[in-house]
Length: 427
Image 1 (cartoon, rainbow, N blue to C red):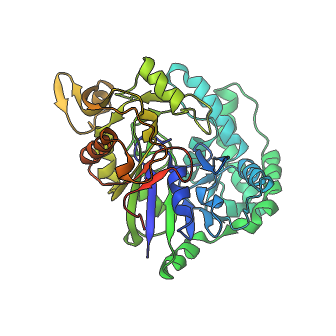
Image 2 (cartoon, one colour):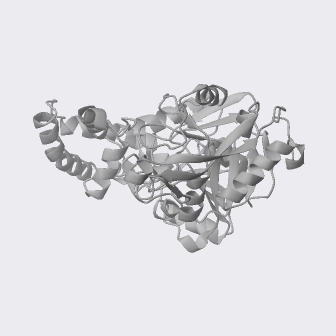
């Protein structure tokens, strides 16, 4: 039962799409297990670039079945627009499966997200304003709308009315906004039902049967480890579990069926939105990383905050995910630096700390302790094997591997599908 989990080992945007796409031709199913259209993957195939927000990256691999699991929150308008855009470019999307238990992002979820973030002012979290958090809140509060509810108008109406009973009180009395009419929401949601019907399925059953038949299933996380609602830099996190455990709850596949957990690491560090970031750079080096690495959010369009590689975070990701392998991306971006700093520990109130502090206060005050590694100037984008890399680039990879606690089994040396060095097979 070859089931693999592939997830971000930093704050997201590590290049999961490239890694998933690389494996897509060798797997039978690629499954998104959490998040929504607040996550984005850029996949480059030949001279074509695809920006995916909600769809699994495997949708670009012929023969692979892409699946949106029950742990994902789905904005129907975004999903249908994304499908339409791919169809216009000649991509076959007919094999997509959507869990009937996945929750729907409703128009009122988006409204609540936006007005709440504005209300918080300087205390804002930095959400994407796409209704993700409020939808997960509705799910936990048991007033959420699921995909399957689109096919029972009576139940859908009851659920929308129940949700708006409270939300309209908040919108009108706290935020001074107009109340939202339940019948208009129901009408809009029912308008998506037949368009989505060909894709809706019992994905829990399908995936478990696939594994019993020795099919290869790849579980793809959105965001990254440090954005996990439980294990991330709370409260500056997402509203779901991108860590490996989320693959089980978000798909209905048990943990004993997972054989490998692959963490995606960028050769430096980035994050989008507010929150602590010990290695963040505010100088020319930070701007160079942003420019050379094309560090702009696929979904948000926001510039990413950039900093040097943080081995403390990498070790933490190894621990909480049980990582078996790393895929190191964007090594080529570091070409040209004479020396490359790597954060090996933190200094907190005069103490050296080598593991991620559990205290939010301590992490906010953490200062990076750097070790300088020799850089390289040679172009590495054409490298096909590890031995093709300059010696200093090889040493950099080996150092990161030793510091991070899991083997680096693949290295990205450029944005293209074929610009990858595979050291050990993931399958």
